[in-house]
Length: 334
Length: 301
Image (cartoon, rainbow over all chains, first blue to last red; front, side, top):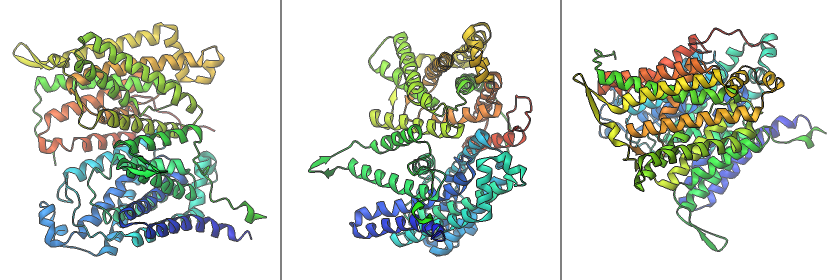
């Protein structure tokens, strides 16, 4: 039975994603959007988990890889005929080309990874607070550049007329792919070495593990996944520079922390649980009927509740609702 | 993209000094709490935001100016103490990373509460506006608030230096920030020291709130958010562990940001955050422990 343990630990988060997708097919057209959105959030949060969860180093900068992925996939997916209208200042090589859905996602992943490599080569030498602030600096720089540099995107405008190919199917497949990669990584030699540095970096370096190299590897992998998730995101809704900035950083970190930052199961549970709450509250801001009465919350309640929840979980249960452990399989070990 | 010819006039220089002074005060506020709690307070900007809203409401209710300023101090201090009791105290034993994420959450929570309660459009705090007018000193126009900010910053920093070196609680704070465990063994009362640091940092936040509101009377939920991010970078840049490096870090980043913001032409000054944060990353790579600290040895087991 022991052989089943890794299978179950991969199958549990995957099953949760599939279950969310199946419920998504049953609900009305208007609610389907919430499910697609939550599945894209799963991809982003798992990408965050690959670095933060395995290394224990905080990063506020991952949304910059998401932003870059969204920019790459978005710019390359807008039909050539419509580019001059929304992006008049685009550089020549971007202006005259359009690629399909899958190549745009692959390129988003590639560019996310390359950017993470460049950033990581420098930043992975840092740890603790310096790392947190430096990754924040990366986010600020990325946001500042994509907001004003109109040769690579729409600047202050949103990515309208990107084909909306991220439906329920693409979001589910994307999330499953990201979960699969994250799981393969954490079972691999490199994932285990990195977790050893998380538990005790001095002891890990004493037995010959290069903390720098292991962190860099995870950073690049999570950059690839975050870029890919950014590609999924831009194919879902008209992203602009503000939608891949502080709010997204906050909500995805909240998901990871609420679920439990040190396990894949926690990342997926956190993403789906917070998404569910978030979508319910978004609905309630427009008024929903609940238990016979009507619940009508003022606009902006969403962030208050999610912020309070994140603070409460951090104070009462800092390892998250799953305790930062993988899906419990104690019954299989007997 | 190169820097254009720097055309720095006296107004820009005074504004940059004033911004440096304000950021230095914020840096001390963040640094003091970090010293005793090992906690980087991401929500420091929201204390300032609350103070700014207090000023805006005071001017809406036509309260006299000094009452408005008192109200601002009251609100900020009450919020600081509440933050200490409800958030910092339960988190004291957690790792710095958990505390940083927690204060990040608190920052977002307070900001979204402000958004919910006061709306996204913002309120105008007009009662202090006269301070924003220029005075002419030997043919050079300088806004009054720039002079006031510089003077207030210098006075506050001097008072703080006196507090930290000449009073019992100040000495205890410094002892606690060097080694909290040993300080407690020698009879330093933890809650008293932490409470003192939180109060002083709250007073500084209120002072900063007043000065920032004069410069920018439109108070929105994200008031002082950007400033806090920049100051945090500055504090880490200078060196978090000790008050003077942290202050210098805050001052330098404020001064640099004010000078570049005034001197660069518009089409380049929109990239100011990029220049600023790229500089931060470069400095952190060369001196991860901060610019103004002695080089530290690797962590020992």
